[in-house]
Length: 73
Image (tube, rainbow, N blue to C red; front, top):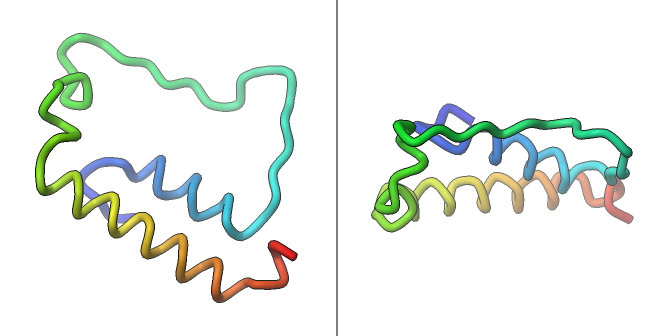
Protein backbone atom coordinates (compact mmCIF):
# COMPACT_ATOMS: atom_id res chain seq x y z
CA UNK A 1 0.00 0.00 0.00
CA UNK A 2 2.99 2.34 0.47
CA UNK A 3 1.36 3.88 3.52
CA UNK A 4 3.05 5.25 6.65
CA UNK A 5 0.91 2.81 8.63
CA UNK A 6 -1.96 0.41 8.10
CA UNK A 7 -0.32 -1.36 5.17
CA UNK A 8 -1.34 -4.77 6.55
CA UNK A 9 -4.95 -3.63 6.90
CA UNK A 10 -4.92 -2.13 3.42
CA UNK A 11 -3.63 -5.37 1.93
CA UNK A 12 -6.19 -7.55 3.73
CA UNK A 13 -9.10 -5.29 2.80
CA UNK A 14 -7.96 -5.19 -0.83
CA UNK A 15 -7.78 -8.99 -0.91
CA UNK A 16 -11.19 -9.35 0.73
CA UNK A 17 -13.00 -7.34 -1.95
CA UNK A 18 -11.47 -9.38 -4.78
CA UNK A 19 -11.96 -12.90 -3.42
CA UNK A 20 -14.18 -14.66 -0.95
CA UNK A 21 -12.47 -15.92 2.17
CA UNK A 22 -13.01 -18.82 4.51
CA UNK A 23 -12.48 -19.56 8.17
CA UNK A 24 -9.80 -21.88 9.50
CA UNK A 25 -9.52 -23.29 13.01
CA UNK A 26 -6.08 -21.91 13.84
CA UNK A 27 -4.90 -18.28 13.81
CA UNK A 28 -3.64 -17.12 10.44
CA UNK A 29 -2.46 -13.70 11.50
CA UNK A 30 -0.99 -12.55 14.80
CA UNK A 31 -1.01 -8.94 15.92
CA UNK A 32 1.29 -8.21 18.81
CA UNK A 33 1.12 -4.94 20.69
CA UNK A 34 3.54 -3.54 23.20
CA UNK A 35 3.25 -0.33 25.26
CA UNK A 36 5.93 1.59 23.33
CA UNK A 37 4.66 1.09 19.80
CA UNK A 38 3.23 4.03 17.89
CA UNK A 39 -0.11 2.35 17.16
CA UNK A 40 -0.73 1.94 20.90
CA UNK A 41 -0.97 5.71 21.38
CA UNK A 42 -4.50 7.02 21.72
CA UNK A 43 -3.87 9.94 19.34
CA UNK A 44 -2.81 7.57 16.54
CA UNK A 45 -6.33 7.17 15.14
CA UNK A 46 -7.60 10.63 16.00
CA UNK A 47 -5.54 12.71 13.61
CA UNK A 48 -5.88 13.97 10.05
CA UNK A 49 -3.17 11.67 8.70
CA UNK A 50 -5.12 8.61 9.92
CA UNK A 51 -8.27 9.88 8.22
CA UNK A 52 -6.42 10.31 4.92
CA UNK A 53 -4.93 6.82 5.25
CA UNK A 54 -8.34 5.24 5.83
CA UNK A 55 -9.77 7.14 2.84
CA UNK A 56 -6.97 5.81 0.64
CA UNK A 57 -7.55 2.24 1.83
CA UNK A 58 -11.28 2.59 1.16
CA UNK A 59 -10.69 4.12 -2.30
CA UNK A 60 -8.35 1.27 -3.24
CA UNK A 61 -10.86 -1.34 -2.09
CA UNK A 62 -13.64 0.35 -4.07
CA UNK A 63 -11.47 0.55 -7.21
CA UNK A 64 -10.55 -3.13 -6.93
CA UNK A 65 -14.14 -4.14 -6.33
CA UNK A 66 -15.29 -2.31 -9.46
CA UNK A 67 -12.40 -3.79 -11.46
CA UNK A 68 -13.27 -7.37 -10.49
CA UNK A 69 -17.09 -7.48 -10.34
CA UNK A 70 -17.24 -11.19 -11.28
CA UNK A 71 -15.02 -12.11 -8.34
CA UNK A 72 -17.73 -11.09 -5.86
CA UNK A 73 -20.74 -12.44 -7.77
